[in-house]
Image (cartoon, rainbow, N blue to C red; front, side):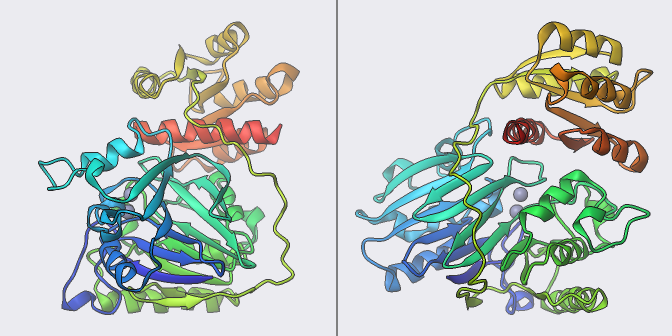
Length: 441
Ligand SMILES: [Zn+2]
Ligand SMILES: [Zn+2]
């Protein structure tokens, strides 16, 4: 399996003398398997140079799968400049997360309207097919691709690629679910010691991986001012990847404000973390033009033979929101109704339990902090009754409340969402929560 970085910058392209070493183009990664399957991960501005390279050196006609993590600018801006897209005879399958308010071709054609660009999406010469992805396992060009939602303000998927005896994950853009990684009394460095269920799930996704490419845009010092922007710190990524027994870690999605010297410093600090915890993991900052090949790193590793799933795509759910904060109920109802769901409301715990019995929702969004009975008590009641023991419950958590958050993990909350949240984030988390509950049954 060949891996090549064409764009390593986050947010906006940042060319110039200060970024020559690590590169100024935004996210774009190319993976080619031994059998010749080509997967392009994101189409930031790095896709332009990838396209030029493929025109001169690539097979003719060219076929590739383009996997978009999400459709923020820095992940799609290179697409209109990807020259092989203009060549008749070439064919591409564009894959991206479902659950957005607009389809993938609608979003991509939006940035190619005449106001912004001289050629429309429909005028591209190559064949373009579109494939909506949700959480689940997919077979793309013979590569086993597992998609899992990341924590980002837009609906965003992380991808695990398995081929040639190698597992490689691409996890951009992602923010820690919880500011504190480890439980207070637990031994750090173990998956079981991770405080938040979301971070534990994220770590489990990359467990024993050969290669992980992860968003590490910020330093821990910068993070508090950038909370909820959807990005990680190098220390979170290094710690969580080491705990997950990852062999090779690439930090990427570099901040546009970090020049080469600064990134060398980040690389050193990440290596210090690895040394201090005694992990054998190899960590570096990804740079544009970096090429590495990985061959049968784990020849004895048997990929779990889970069947290729037919993931839940764009389904409409009956959802009950239990929250005493009317503003949150209104915001959540509006966002979820727009996303195609049917939504009911309850302003307190007692009303919530009555509504669950009467309306039998597919999923409950439950606030923890309410006048009695609070979210914890409601969750206890739900889990004690056979008919609601496995009802998917998405718990709304507020930062800094370790005790009640932990209690809700232990009581069997299905998933957690931190306040404040954005409408697309809520929809993606509702879908992943429902999919996880369905998988667990
Ligand atoms: Zn990004
Ligand atoms: Zn983003």
